[in-house]
Image (cartoon, rainbow, N blue to C red; front, side, top):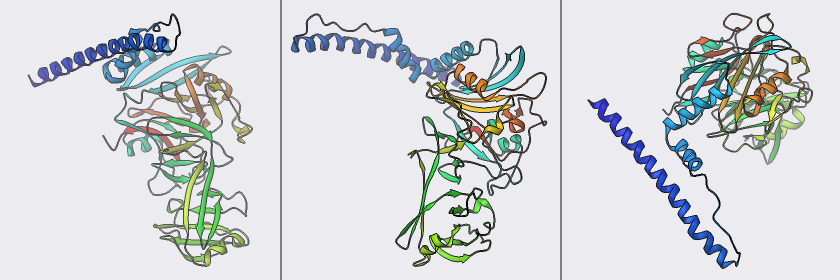
Length: 420
């Protein structure tokens, strides 16, 4: 009986909402009919009439925003129209898993897509995830990463150093920068209600003893002996030894507590700065130091960042800048992973199987064209090849080269929000 009362109340609320929308639409039209002639008369403009309004379209847009039922129905229709010959499965409200096969020069390519209406999936959170909570030097299967984070969808993430698992490129989770960029490669910023993509540079500084020193990277391999690199506790117990003519400075609670050319212990409540003595010795005057970490472009309010490369779709246009991002080695036809977003702010995961007769993989240009064809206005390539693996609702849904997928450094996941 309680269930029947609840449904009846919901039905009445929906009807009231529709009535309110109808009244609002009529009110807008009446207001326009009254104000436009007055405006025309006051400006002595003859024969000005109210514009033609599509009341149905206005009502559709308003209802789509306030009614979950209407939005879900529209999302269902959108997915059916976008993927007409695909196998489509509901994962949860606002999340669809699509399986399809495309043909290139008469040869098959097997593709798994997950598309998410972020407003319908309001109880879910999109975020990068590391294979370990405590260290960057870790690798685990996608299934383990997903289960450890209560994820319903997971896709392998950015590039990583195979020997250690340390991500190679920008990775920010919950506004904490774990690793900095390499080669200014493209990254996706995930905001509260939107997405953005750009080639990212680190804009970080150390301030102390009246000096400001630029930081070249965070928890990344040293490219030059002249670079200043910050190592946080996630790097491990010790920093690498300082470069030639260099020094490592241990910082605890914004105070320099140790200086050494050897490996330095990384404190849990601090970090180690490693770089040339000629640059860092200036901080030893008063031994106070403050680390500031930003990005260029300055993504104010960004929650998470995951890098990849190259671009696939930029401002709605196919754009593949493989050479500029030093990614020539990943050309050719391969298994591929990609993420993107649409003008409706839907988020899209894609995994492409390859290197087998039943699925030959894609070139980067083919992947870019595919991402654009399914409505992405922005999209980037992620780590691919043997890393490509997609997990949906408790199982791996594509066919990676190694059963279950190789152990990974990180992933991008859709999981139950901590606030829900």
